[in-house]
Amino acid sequence: MTQSASETWSVRIVVPETSSLDAAGETFDLEVREDETILAAARSAGVWLPADCQQGWCTTCAARLVDGDVAHPNARRYYDEDREAGFVLPCTAKPRADTTLIVGQYDDFLEFRADHGRPPGSSKLDT
Image (cartoon, rainbow, N blue to C red; front, side, top):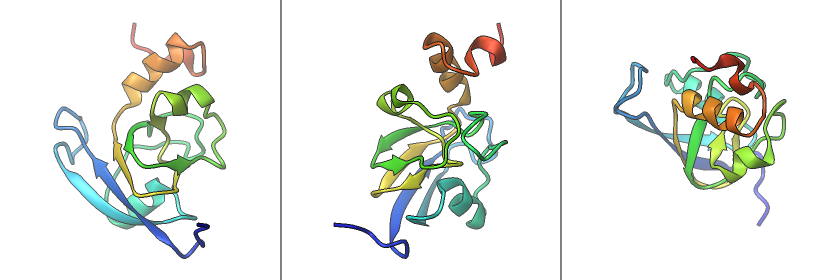
């Protein structure tokens, strides 16, 4: 079934208790339009998530996909292996189903990218 841009998906955002984010330990349930990024919907709902470039380039917003599906039609730097490993970039991710994300995965994503020779690679890792 094809969804129209006016359709919405339920997106659950989980902030781990161990996160340095102010919302550590909280869970947020949002309705996100299919044509809207998860980051934009979160911020519109008053949920602050880390992000810098908002183009899928810097990886600051990295999250893990627990369930559901997203598309990254405008991400500048998002690879098949990122998707296969369950990483998403909420700044460019648009839901394609009801979805659950664990946010605040920047460090894990940097490690993953470094291990796979993808940018930003080890250049941003604290070594």
